[in-house]
Image (cartoon, rainbow, N blue to C red; front, side, top):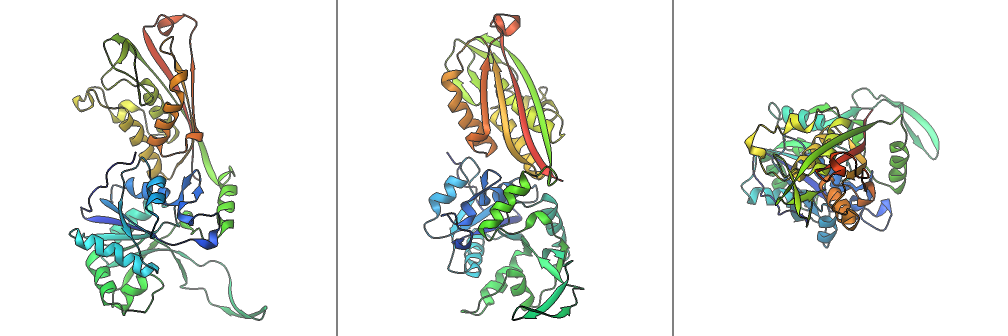
Length: 395
């Protein structure tokens, strides 16, 4: 079940526009709810902003009747503020800005298209930094291909590409500047993007380095091309991380395994809730992104984590992975114990792990084995777990 929406607050708000019908992309769904790399486009965008320390709140503008689609796509995440958009992109952005203003406004706003799902953390950081000295900023890539005019299928005059840029989103603004631009914009007149509106009001905008990962999904072939590039080892770095944990079984303790509470005579003893399964997977994800181990981030000497639910450890590791631009493709968990029986709980465990990581349950494997009475687990003194995680990062 999705968590309750967080209020619009803080200095910097991400405004994601996802109100279109996306008909050119086909697939029977608006493109923002179609999957790429195992998740809906809009989920990727929301996760990237949630993972950024620079962003305080997220507002998501959706189309009429898309509430259920949005909630399903974002299940398990801290739910953004959902706002109904308008008939055009400009109207949808204005609806989002109106909502932010009604909640007290903010200092900075990053306006982003959900159709650009793979947002690098460095772009967010660069945009926010640029707003310290400019009223607005956009990410852009220089045009490197030859340009030419043409008509009736014939090549015409060359066009000088010097000073030409591919402009991307998110586009960042001081809130008061872009809010005023939208309020003053003539009714019935559309605009290509928010940057043009700000420029029309006399604001000078900075350019920060764009990123190839920010390409826009528009047509059905874009999804096919992404699937092909994602499977190409040359397109991304593929990493595998492993994790292992073991805890002692103690009478009278509550038993948590893979985020599921299991009725048993004994539970696992540890500083947190001692969920060995989630601890092993946390170390696996951290290992894949070379970010140390669970003890580095949640030291057992810190009383803050006494009795803590281990789902927050795995969610934290997944957030670090997202911040690094990583995609979690698959996790594999093996639980080692004589009792209780794991089989009846496997599907609930898969669903819970998938929910924490924000991946499909089909990308989560849960297995169990015994040690045939050998060793501490064989003597029912404890439970152990091995975890593996397969991720890819930008090359």
